[in-house]
Length: 278
Ligand code: NAD
Image 1 (cartoon, rainbow, N blue to C red):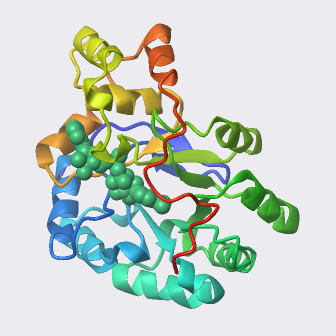
Image 2 (image 1 turned 90 degrees about the vertical axis):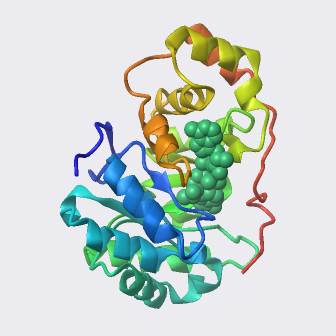
């Protein structure tokens, strides 16, 4: 199986991550093994899962049956909210389900500041990283204040912050804070979860026509041109190939600016400041 040519981003601890991967949120158990196998066959080498997606075991089976050498793959999973006080055990359970002896990136899924447990979880992740069983550690859905607490209390800077980010929700202040501290941005919902009118907007259609690309490719290119890591979700092989075919063109400054101007503060997922689901 031949890997797609995807650029790597170097994280703040020296770990390399393919800038584009395949995300498996809402890929149903029963379907996930086939979807991940199909992504690996299409040439993807970076898979983003999470304990709460309930498909780690299937991701693991697809990896095992692919025969791809472990060191050519990049696997991310995430600590679920109710496990923040038992992160070490929850991590071992994730490894068991994945059938792996290490992951490439382990994230705290949500800050859950109202419960005050993320700092303890972060200290556990630091130990996991020191043990070599996670090549890098990071967070997801963290606000500036959540990040500042980890920096102040441990001095260990998360390698990434995985946040909802798309043209309608650009999180500029948070993105600037992360850039200042060397925290890479992983944009979840990069295509606005397919729930907006983005793909019909005239500026996106014009850029797509100008470059011979699709609207989805234009939006993904807007992300990668800003050094973000993306893993759009699709279960369809043709879209897997389409979403990866974004490294042979560049949007012009005015095309980037037109998409920048879509900022509307529209989050499609939960607000991380109030999301208290355990
Ligand atoms: P996304 O923006 O990737 O949107 C996925 C939807 O976009 C698909 O269901 C499909 O309808 C559409 N789509 C995909 N490719 C397309 C194409 N080429 N043309 C037209 N439509 C296309 O949204 P997402 O799945 O929410 O985010 C991607 C990944 O981010 C997830 O699978 C998951 O790994 C991660 N994620 C993380 C969190 C978090 O809290 N950390 C939350 C949500 C998602």
